[in-house]
Image (cartoon, rainbow, N blue to C red; front, top):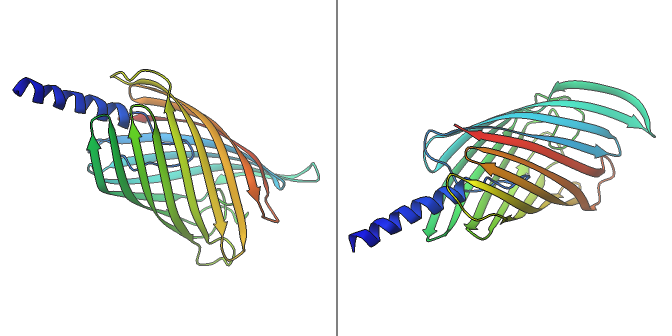
Length: 261
């Protein structure tokens, strides 16, 4: 009987480490926390092509896990903006973008053999440190306060993540938005520990700018390679529906990596 209990404990430890180490969705987030004291250094460079120009956002992100329920982080983005007009280059700049402060608290967790379901509250405070270019998610020079809920289910066969929240922009009448993100992760390799995994991600990103009565729905196809403490990932994101009059998106390309200390 004792041997069986120890086997279940070992198997549970193995599965939980495998699930956690797969990494979060590429363009989204997840409710699963790593171990207390872990530091995650990451970046997710975005190249965004719009009808107003091309924008390259290179964020340096640091996350610290206070305990198995709480995480805090800071995102320092550097942005290269190139504005064009009818195909002719108008001007370009390289600046510090809008700094972000992240906080997450996991308030529900249910683990079973080979699967887990978790829910976390999330807040993202955006500081007005960038230029006033009005490029959503990159440079707005507007203070923003996002509050949301993340719910995620992961097993050794697949993962599903959901995030619903509202972004408040006190000094803007058009940028306040309701956000919803839905992602599916599919591991391609057999689960091993230490982790060595390839994941495919299928992600939807929805933005409803309520005051402006505008809507944006995007789809991202991504791939992720995780080995031990290192994760590398890439994704291409395309707009499916957009009713904005300006800064209409054409394509975004993401390339990123993260390392867990």
